[in-house]
Image 1 (cartoon, helix red, strand yellow):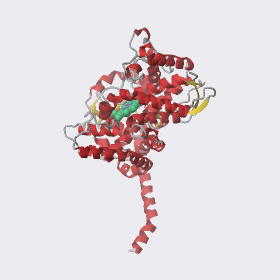
Image 2: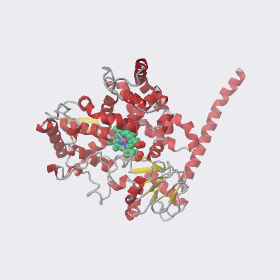
Image 3: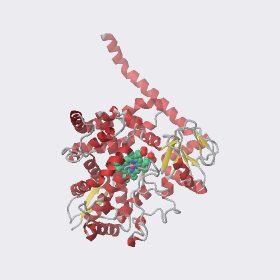
Image 4: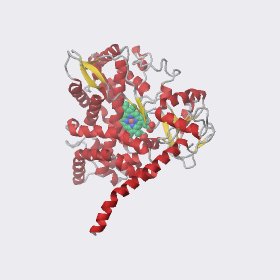
Length: 539
Ligand code: HEM
């Protein structure tokens, strides 16, 4: 026995080395195959970026350009094909090429049933959810959109004062209270703390939203998912279950730490439920809670047939971690971009002043009488078109994903596009939001940040301004159609309260040049390390 053990120990490094080498060879070969592959797409569809040679070599060239300079390919494809009503293929060898339809075919795209074209599958692949989310049911029975729509969005108004309290405390903590000296702050880092605290205040309340260890695991977990997903995408499918745990090990540790905080709460709630024998904690119960754990339990119990898996503590904890990812990361990127856009615009000070006046007028002026509602309630926020527009304009110009609507063909027989081309199951097809958002035909002076572009006409009630949450064929910052971001009402609420407070309490020192966003693996990252100088205003 001892001899066998010794022999195994001696051989172990060699076995591991051989397996790793084998995996690396397979992966490299697979990546080379992807570089040259036409992904079974019909020959009549042009591939952008392949130059004059429409052969395997041309595709490899396009794929490499797509990896290093996706924006160049999007601009080329839009000008050459989309503007002429033609479909083209955008090479992307990390997780498969995308068939890009011209904007005129958006209605066709929206009409397709979910069992023909699925947006959920694109998200799932983009985030490699089968490997990065830690429970099988997270992927199959995605209940997030339902809990967000039925619980979070409906209840958000009731949280206005809590959110305001949290924003004020955060800004004092991270941007300071000194009204004399400018303070240099890392924009992304401080806004990440701000958005994390605001979101956790709503999802889990006090005192958890002020617990530094809990905040740290939530914000770190959300940062690493996207990177782990990109790394896993490089491997062939059959190796993903093996390499997945390696790339997600740090996330897993963070998830375990996160669940260490909320698991006792979940158990306590489920125990009370079992003891009461009721199928739901009564709302008049003085200690009935209004937080994510309760929403998840209520949602599970609200179904005609209760699925016991939905009440599994591990599933509820994993869903919480993923909701935190969806909610916090998107919002902090959007707010960071908006702050840099404002700071770099020649009208920075004037724009902040306009928003400040709007905030003061609506929250404290004669129009602010709100029948006992919060001074920052939904109806009040709806009367802040300039704050709203500053955010929407930034999302238009500097949204964090280049796709507008992207769906995956899930019909086993594939699908026939409006131009007659037939594309197979597994292909991604959609439109490029990035190109549509930067088209001069849609937006005058499209490459300029014009903070109040969407508020024009609001004055004097001439025309209804276009609000942050309104998607259209020309604005897809939250995607468009039935699968547009379900969290956008919550996000808009948070972001408007945050930006409104920044305008109210702080001056931002204008900067000569906007630091560039970085394109990486289909994400467009905001400036992550750059600083800004801010100073508390004398009130
Ligand atoms: C400014 C902030 C946000 C932006 C710009 C944003 C943007 C988006 C976009 C573009 C999509 C569609 C992705 C695709 O399939 O192509 C999406 C989906 C989604 N978002 Fe957001 N989002 C934001 C905030 C939030 C928040 C706060 C939550 C949660 C409370 C959330 C939850 C989700 C979920 C669950 C989906 C998947 C929906 C589905 O598959 O049907 N998002 N978001």
